Figure 1 (cartoon, helix red, strand yellow):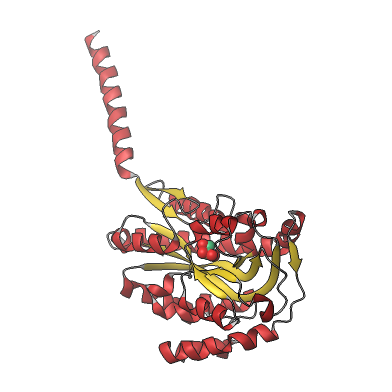
Figure 2: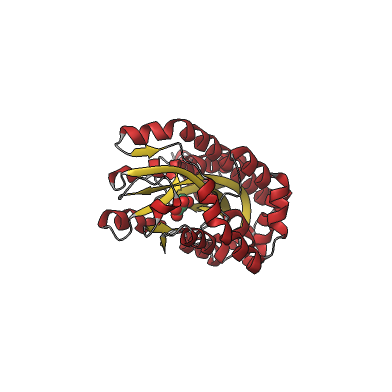
Length: 326
Ligand code: EAX
């Protein structure tokens, strides 16, 4: 009997040792974003998770934190720098505060359509900007997408800049966006995204601007009656990593993260395209009055000074390179 007991004991301890080894080997990666679990960012987060877990054969597991549960985008970017979060999917909204070179992407009416924007971000300039992030304690993994931004508000239909006059519009914490809205005659109020729904509900601000993707994912129709398809600025998203995690990995491991980020961006862009097709109808079904046929000329004229202010501060080299591609 003794050998049998020993054999069983041996098997049990082997299994336990195996489990301990597995538990030790899997590194949990935290991934944060500001949007809901049904959003285009969530689609991208899941693609990141699947790709990384598959490539690493389970050595890394990814836990997604949605809806700003790790804070707003500015806070999460700070979290990457100090290593309290590993991966963040964020708009470029607050990014220029950390990597000023990215401000150029936030200029209003810079990109004409999705193809052009994606092409620039996937090209040399996009790569350069991702590389630049290393100078600011961030790892730029891939350019993803939020979408062309449109204005919503609870007061009136906006068909021209004059209609935006005096309107209190929440903007992202981005000086280029704030300037553009000032030029339109609105009263820009920068605010982190997780505070926005309540601010709209309580009337602290009259309106906000975001892509169809975000308006759909956040049920903004509950607090906003009017949507105007101004498409006034393309909103890129970036998949960013913490240098504190990534610098400690092997080249092979780091490449898995880059690949997972590219898969994430691809999945997100597909979802953005789908929502561009179907989102407006959904918003109308939910009671929003949508102004579609907007003459954007007067809006472009109104924000023109934002370009001068931008180039005076940041130069025109990157801007000219983008405009050459247009
Ligand atoms: O990145 O803050 C914003 O309006 C962003 O579009 C949102 O957080 C998604």
